Each structure stands twice: as C-alpha cells, then as structure tokens.
Length: 604
Ligand SMILES: Nc1nc2c(ncn2[C@@H]2O[C@H](COP(=O)(O)OP(=O)(O)OP(=O)(O)O)[C@@H](O)[C@H]2O)c(=O)[nH]1
Ligand SMILES: [Mg+2]
Image 1 (spheres, rainbow, N blue to C red):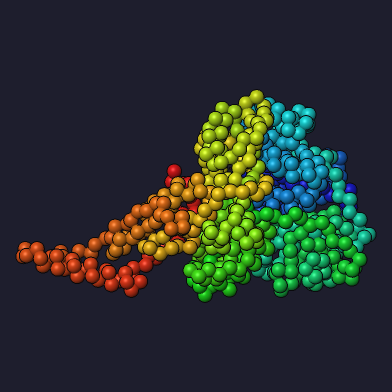
Image 2 (image 1 turned 45 degrees about the vertical axis):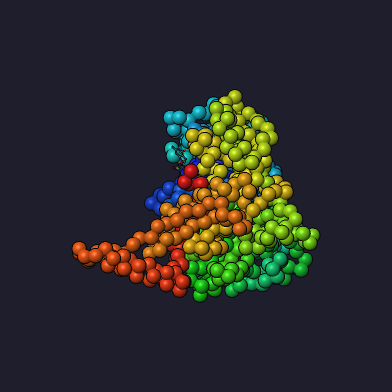
C-alpha cells in the first residue's frame, strides 16, 4: 500500500486502563478477526498474559479500514503493556509508529504510567489522540478526567474521545482520528532497503522471526539479508505482517510494520535494535539508530535446581531473550549453587515472569537468589567496580566507599492520602521534591528514593496506604554514597549464599528478623534443632530455632524403671549427634522457601 494510506500507531495507558480490550473492538470493527474467533484481550497471546490478565509483550496487528471518505487504509496497531516493569516494550513500540492513542480509564483518571508513557510518546514527536475509556461504568467521571487530560496535554475538550472497550462506544471515532491525526510514514521506497528490528520471537516452525519497522526501500521474499550490527547473513525465507497471526506476503516496504523470517541458526545474531539490510546493498546502507540500552533495575541469580541442567538453562535463556529484550544475563559460578546466570531485570514482576516462563516454556526448575540493585564500590586500593551480587562484595576492611542507585519517583494519588505517602516514603529514606496538582483533588508527588527501597514491595505498600488509588513510576537518577552492609543468613550453622543480601544498614535489623521469621515458618522440622541466624559480619542480629520433632522411642515401654526410658532417650540423642557430625543434619531448603523469602514485605 502507498505510504500516504498507511497509519502506524500504539495504544498506551496506565496498567489495566483497557488497552487490550479497546484493541479487541478495533479488530472487530475492522473485521480483522472473524467473529467466531474473537475472544477477550485477543492480543494477549501468551498463556501467562491471559491467566494474569495483564499484557507483558507488545503485540502488533494490521487492520484494513475504509474511512468515511471512502478511502481504504492500512492501520498498523501495536498494543503495549502498562506495567512499569515492561516499559522497554512500550518505548520500542513508540519508536516504530507515528501516533499514539492515549487511553485513560474514566473511573480512575490520569495515573503514573499515563504520564510516563505520554512523555515517552512526546519524546518521539508522536501525534497523541486522547481517549477517555470505560465510560459505560456507573462510576465513570468523564468531566473530572477530561480536565486532567486537558491540564496534562493542553488539548481542547472536544478533542477528547469518549469510549468504551466494553460497548464499542467511540471506536469509530478513534479509527477516524487515527486516519486524520496520525501522519503517514515518510520513508523512501526507492532507497536501499533498511528495517529496524523492534522485537523478535522464536517460532517452532519458522525459527527466529524478527518484527520490523521498514524505514526505506523494499524487501522481497528470497532476497539475501545482512544484519548490520552482528554481521550475520541470511535469506528472507518468509516476509509478511501480523494480524496478529502471521500472514505471509511477497514483499515488505517502507512505512510498514511486518516480520521477516531469516532461517538463521544462531539466534544471538538477531538482536533487537539492529538494522536489517539487503546483502547486495548492505555496504552502502547506514544503520538505523536502534534503541537506548535498557538499564537493569534489579539483579538476581538463576541456577538450575539440578546442576547438570546448566546447558539446557542456557538455551532456554537465549530463547527467552529473543522475546524479552529487557532481559540481560551472563554466566556465573557459585561454590554453593554451581553454574547459573546473573540476570539483570526491570523489576520484581519481570523476575517473576522470567522465572515462570522458564518453567512453563522450558520446563526448568530453578533456584533464585535474593534480588539486589547494582552498587558501585571503591576499594581501599583505589579500584572501583559495579557489584550486582552479594558474592562479589568485598569485606569491610577492603572497602573505601559504596554508592547506591537512587531513583526519581512520581506518585499519583488523591490528595487525601498525602500524609500516608509522606510517612511511607520517609520510612524508606525518600526525599521529598515537589507536588503538582492534576486537578483540585489529585496530586503528583515527586521524590528521590533509593532504588532498593522502590523495587521490592513499595508498590504494594503504596496501594495499601492509598486504598488502592495511588500509582507509581520511577526511573534511575544517580549513584550516591551510602552505608551498605552484607546480611548473611545461616541455617543449621551453614551459610546460605542464596539468601545473602546487600542493603542499607538502617534496614538490616528489620530484614534480618523478617527472614528469620519466614524461615522459621516455612522450613520443615527435622530430628534435630535447627538454628536460624541473621548476621552482619560476625555479629548476629537476629536468631531463632526450630525445635526438633522427637520420634517417640519410648512409647512401647510400660511401667518399669524410669532409667530405662532415659537410656533410650540418651541413645536417641547420640544417634542425632552422629547424624549431625556426619553432615546428614544439613537442612534441605524447599524451593518455595526461596520464593517466600524473595517476596519480602508480605508478612508485615
Ligand atoms: N466496564 C468496562 N471494563 C473494561 C473496559 N475496558 C477494559 N475493561 C476491563 O478492564 C480490565 C483491564 O482491561 P485490559 O484491556 O486488559 O487492560 P490493559 O490496559 O490492556 O491492561 P495491561 O495491558 O495489563 O496494562 C479488564 O477486566 C477489562 O474487562 C471498558 O470500556 N468498560
Ligand atoms: Mg493489555
């Protein structure tokens, strides 16, 4: 299709504001999907997305639309996730389009990711179409939310579309506005072919599939390819677009969003952000800018439960990385846990999803270490490095200074909860910066906070102090000098490296007690007493014990001398001592204990 009749756009919003449901209606109205194949949130194609009711991955879909002026258009839609852990999916989607439908749930109003995602879209100079959604609900507050949008965008009231993904209200208007407001792409089809890879996926039949935005030129099926950054070469075994199923065509051309199957065996050769060129003209083709590197927010190590499964885990991670561009990992070895990977992730939900996908899609049983942010350290000899694992943290007497990452944090909430938020943030070492009003009753509060205080359970806590109304966005800001300590956990006098944590000294006591209590609750009892301790260096800061269950060795005795009973008990005690000394007294920590420890904060 000629570029003047192509429109590329995303739907962006805060989590759960109804992007995927609105996309359903767009697909329906444009008859992209047959009625009998329609289902709720059709673009949430992963099982995990459907079960959890959240979008994790961006998902393109092409629609044909005949507008009111009688002209046939090609609309390339990308549905995006709303959760802050998947922002990288949003930013890559935005870089592939010319416009964005900004959706706001009219029962909620503007939230933290509404603002954050809007700014990402404005950075790309996209046309913004403001939409108030869920107007079918009785508690919808259209006028209040419209005012917030007007304040935020500087748009006019009549530019805001009122819509419902449930009833289909406003959907026709949205399609018309996409046609009239979103500029058509302006690539040059006569120039050398080049396309940027914004996502990729492993398909059992096709192998690696690259999702691309074509900038210039044309690529035909069977053309030879070159990946400019990795230097890999291949052939366009198949090209086409997504509907959201693959529809193969003879050609992809400038302005379009589509896919390319290259048949490459080496999956690491296909990299998100790389430019695909035609092999013949690759020498004279400049690479497209690609994407900003993502900065991992948290690090955790992942080990296979069975040591001999390392190779299988590596393959699983590489495949996962294809469809999860924000996942970073490198090989790691631990004396206690064997070979595994140090992973960089965007947050706790991201970690949970990675773990869940490794389990479901690759059948991997895993041990995961306590997540940590990345610290910068300077040693007494003057050398500096970034430490992401407690295992690499030097002993105190070799350490000159530790710096921890700080984030800018924006919290959106009804004004009545300001007091509760203030307390919560200052408990976590946050610093207040300023407050803006979205409307007379709702505020955006700006803070600086240590990243470590934000990523773990801050969001849950914020929800509870704001009765569920508060929302949160955060971004890395800078490193600051800080008093960081290494908290060690011992079970039955054995150090458990997977539980070691780096944290601020003011939080060590609370955290130590918390882990000890969780372990006491979750570890199974043994035939001997299990000591549980939390320590900083050689100082024990919290301790407890799980009493032994005693096998009743005296039960069959009746009457007789008490010394007979004592004798039997003594014999039992000796046996236990022998067991301990032989090492059989070591405690096997069940995998769900690791998860419980990681999900800290739940117990408060
Ligand atoms: N009543 C009503 N409910 C809606 C409407 N749109 C979405 N919902 C409901 O709101 C919930 C979230 O909808 P989704 O479409 O999954 O929201 P989303 O924005 O795609 O969510 P994420 O992708 O996870 O950020 C679901 O339970 C939908 O059924 C609407 O217009 N009216
Ligand atoms: Mg969604």
